[in-house]
Image 1: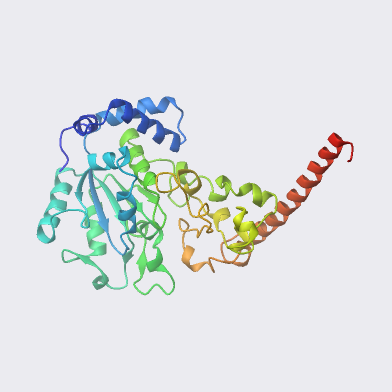
Image 2: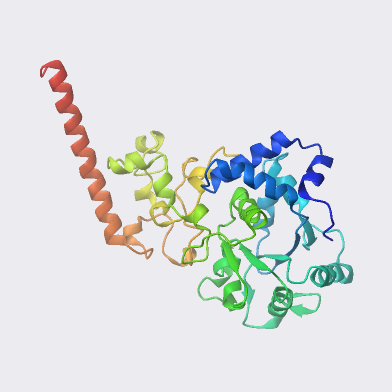
Length: 351
């Protein structure tokens, strides 16, 4: 259960220095596009925060979201911040099971009524209550009961945010998103299959620091992490603008790091922080590893055509615009080449 110790006291007991804590806050402020001065303010507010009670519910899911957040590049402040939260219920990570586990959830709800956060991963099956249950309760009853006293809900992963792969046609279980059921609580969607660890911890840090819900886009995603497309921030973007596209995963263009648009990359229509926050401690992300973006943080990404066909031939929206963009990119590339040649000629006298 949540206790009376502040986060600063908890971290100090774990041997974390104030300097390390300030570095963490500076990193978080940068990731959330806050001014540098906010780092100190964030550190001050986080240091005074009492352990926040969190109840994590898992429904129709693959445990990938839990795997992701537990694989923060340890040992880091991210994992310590998560440890400092009072995770009062998570049936994958907690030691108790059965009656004892449900008793822990009920006690946390009673002791922290109106204050606890609910984190949900997985979609909810509405076709038949027997498709999923916790402690003898259907998933939908479990969610509604737990959400009743929550301060806010964070839907992590595309399944909780939009219905996910369980909702893919023909949707045999009648899977729906959390927001399709809960209408009277603030809901923050953190989609991804799975989400980036630092995005999940960043959203929690925002709520703890500012006591508010971050600015959200039309799909309920925090704009600070989902405000730009992967294409906007991709290091291969200059090749797109030059009209240089890999034609296969092993051709010369692919080996030279050219744009993967023609191999089905969904970066131009996918909003996420993959190209900036990256994965595995900021080492890489799928496009940097040589594979196109699948668009996993967008609704219904699994039902929008092949992952290996260009956007212009799929159902991702804006196909004509994207195709025109590719042509424009080629035109820009040709123009840039001609301009460069003209400049070279002026320097060498045409030789």
